[in-house]
Image 1 (cartoon, rainbow, N blue to C red):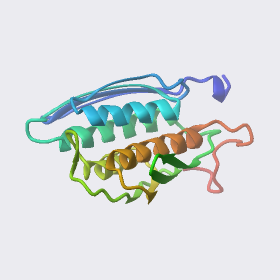
Image 2: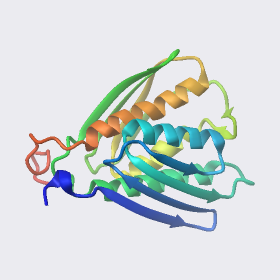
Image 3: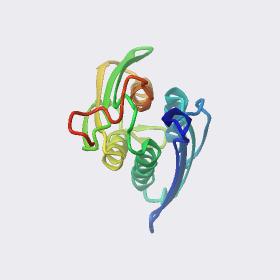
Length: 200
């Protein structure tokens, strides 16, 4: 079976005393999203991420929101990262690198990804408010940190312009989505795995 004909899907569950998270992803979808985390703004961000990455995704999370949103958001990031890693598989034929500069009204965000297998996050996205709805803005970094660690992803996200915190956060998720779509794309020019080392 040719690489582009193989199903690049994964379903992952993570259950702790604090959260229960289920994620299903299809990298070769059309952007269909079903998301429920109990955090309205976070649901909005995840739906945007799935839509603009052209994945199909189902994300269900139940967490101790009576404490705060931290555990739910972080564990969702961990579970998505693990699902991405499984769906990508051996990385044969993929572009590996992806980048995007995405505008949203006043906001402009750069995102660059390397699916190197070596996790790293550089998140330079300052916020001027502590919350957007029930979403703590400091959790944006924690989400991407958890995701990049589990996916084995080198990830840079940087704010280039913007003043509205809703726009800034949404722009970051959309930029990540577009860069991810690029990185996981199958490129017919890539023979085997795109590295001089022979393995990632």
